[in-house]
Length: 123
Image (spheres, rainbow, N blue to C red):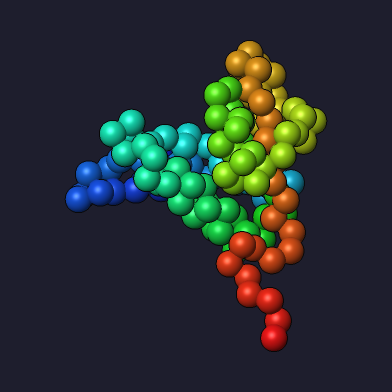
């Protein structure tokens, strides 16, 4: 799934990555594999990557973005606007992997309906 990945470079060095897995039959997409090199933490890179894949998903017409997290629940809720979800919110294909995986990650979801964060109010 290498085509699902995006990287963030600093001085031509990859310091962060994120993936956007698509589930078009459900009109949902997954923000996955968000990682920032510890040497580059607290520079808002994770938030920038999360916003980037949200913009792509919205542009492709997906109605919901979801992610799974075992440790970054607060980041996704407070910085990215996700809400707590349930395994039932996952596309069937992804839910099957989730249940077989046994990690018991927290499901987080975000509606992409309506204007995005960059939308300007009508004059």
